[in-house]
Image (spheres, rainbow, N blue to C red):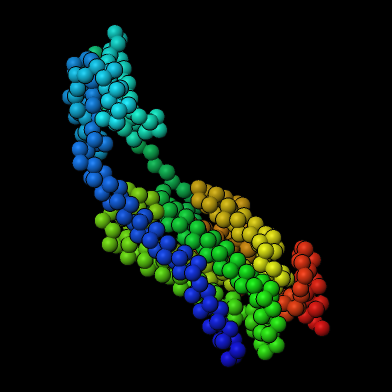
Amino acid sequence: MRDFWIIFKQSFMTKLGTKSFIITTGVMVAAIFLMANMSSIIDTFKSMDGNDRDDIVYVSDETGSLFEPLKQQLAVQEADFKIEQTEESNDALKTKVKEAKIDSFLVLAMNEEGTINASYTSESASEMEKPLAFQEALQSLQTTLQASQLQLTAEQVSQLFAPIEFEQNAVSPNSKTEEELSTARGLVYVLIFVIYFAVFAYSMMIATEVATEKSSRVMEILISSVSPVKHMFAKIAGIGTLGLLQMALFGIVGYIALKTSAADMSEGFFSVFGFSNVNPSTIGYAIVYFLLGYFLYATLAALLGSLVSRTEDVQQLLAPMSFLIIIAAFIAFSGLGNPEAAYVTYTSYFPFFTPMVMFLRVGMLDLPIWEPILSIIILLVTIFLLGWFGAKVYKGGVLMYGPSRNLKDIKKAVQLGKE
């Protein structure tokens, strides 16, 4: 057991002290704080422009009667920019836009039928927010003008445009309400991405570590004093512990960033991700499936990594495993819109897809408790069998040198391990 902890500590501390790990962790922490305070940062950059030019759109009202109603309508819509009336010609305003003296302007006119004609001009055609706000406001004004010409009362206009009452119900006992789904969808999306990234990255790290030790011939010294099986599981546990601590650090940093952020987690960008109403059971399942998914793929990665003698061959031999992870992520992300789809249900019990796909179903649906428990049992059994078989392959694989061509080398590794 002492040998196990020595290798465990060596794997943990070696990766912990690498520049790539430290830089990646620092960048991720900075990115989390950046995302949490994005709205405040954008507002700060806007306020740095002393004349607030970006918040003013100049309006040339050729009708002489639309500017004030438009201003009132934009106020009702809570538009985050201001409009200012101007008497300058269109050519003069275009010249100012070209010279970057103003950002944009709007020209209002009306044809003989009483239809509003508007022309919005800016430096770039990619601008979307302000033109859409103007279209919505002017459409409301057009409706009001037409209602006035038809001599409709305000009550008749409100009845004409009254929204219908629409309610969505589900008979499935597993379904949540639309409000609950909207809250869970974003959070599940984020956690699936975290599971995908962590499982992929740490599994690749284990395979590369094993291949590096083989290529430097350090492996020959290690297995002379420690059994290959103990060496494999010590590496998996050491790097897995490091990964779990890194994910925990990101979670703590994310929580602190959101709590200290000036942004309201219940509104705007954060409302999409459901951060204002986190279900503790969802976080618990995320941790369980993260750990099981890691040990499943880490064991497979150690098995495959033992077959290569050069780090350059790791990517090629791990390609089948990478495809499994990518397919699982694709199914999970595609199932966000319809978590009760048959293909999502069936694939959630396939062990290599379970960590992400079953987690999707657990987060999005009210499943009976036996379903996640069954999936966890399937994962544990698969990890045990893969660990048993992987130990046999690893035992012979670490002694194999030369180019690794394909997965047929697994059979050779098993035979070598028996000798």
